[in-house]
Image (cartoon, rainbow, N blue to C red; front, side, top):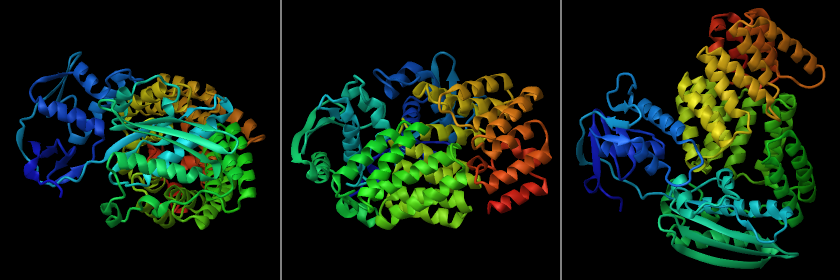
Length: 591
């Protein structure tokens, strides 16, 4: 039985009600979605209304122990997002007052009552840390990473509404880190941590797992499995069931009533050919590098995998992902890459129609190849029905079904939801920065860029987001410096040249902008260069006719940098031109 409102404390202020136990905020009865850390900050301020809550107190509650993110940047961002949710202002605060160098104070009058809503059973969260390599052979690392991922996937199937599992991309960030379970639990906000190791012999696999309660580091489960290699998939499912049983989570009837697939209802052995599976997991290992070279190596493994097993759905999905990234980043002409990718995605769906992430990827291909928004929406809706909490599905939904139509607040909310279970995802954190820029939240975007640089200093994303945010604030010197740095990052996409040229042109440096334009023309004689890159520079130079020629080409060639066309602020001066309306119509977007 769910608890009634009379069992729980609610704090009311203004038109808001915060249910501290349920972790929910509502305004006039309508729920407001807040990320977990935002609600922690709000609850601390409400519980000490009228008093100063110091930055140090907030730090101890939010990021105790040996954290690896910048506390100052993160806290500033959290306070800014919380103010935004409450409709508050730093300059003229109604609710949250900043006390420089000290902390914050909640200003409004609060009243304590009982919650008016029932609360559902709280969802348990856990993380599966990267399994240790018991063989001692570095060449076996890819197998250990694959087994970690298999356990995560199996746990995600158990009871999606009641068990939240931290995504593989975030879990891998803890590989090789000497961190205690309590610190990891606090950093990720999880209740349990799974750790262990795996060793593969000639025809056998030894797997051991330990389930530890994060709060007090109590060992709840320790189990060893030693099986023949063909039994590995059954063993992974058994290990996931043992873990779930130990924390009292089973395939709940509520999940089935909600239409969520649970337990074995969506379980399929990926392939009966272990050699094909070995090729597949090596491919995933190379794909994680995110480089053109990594994708090329991965493709070779995947082609061998499907040659051995033509019914290997996951391998076709991985091939489709490679085509998507190569086309999106401009390493391959997008129409060519996406035409090949959609075939791979459709093959994966034909073989196994139950995989949410593949449906979401197929939706992205419908967007890119035909601007077919009804099909995009259909595939995304199906993906969300199959896996509503999947971070990757939520990200793809935000980028492909919300952002192109200018539904930026919804897109930001979906990405923030994805980050709850995948907080260290470079892709999700990077897209959050871009969405904040598109939504004209430039200061928040700059804070996000600093977080990106803190988490991923060797990636181009942080510099890029910082550059476009400073450009929109017309702080051109900082914008140009950030863009130059982004271009120097190994493996940076070629489209960054166009963004730098746009910024130079808008800043008044026509000479260097034209130099970059010449550089792009020379480059285009050898490799693919996105047409949007030429368009951006012509726009920066005020050359509208030339810009429209390249914009039209960009739409025709399926240049993905055109997708935020309804939200780019630098396009505002040409929105009244009939040629702009023609671009929207060609993309099947409402003018």
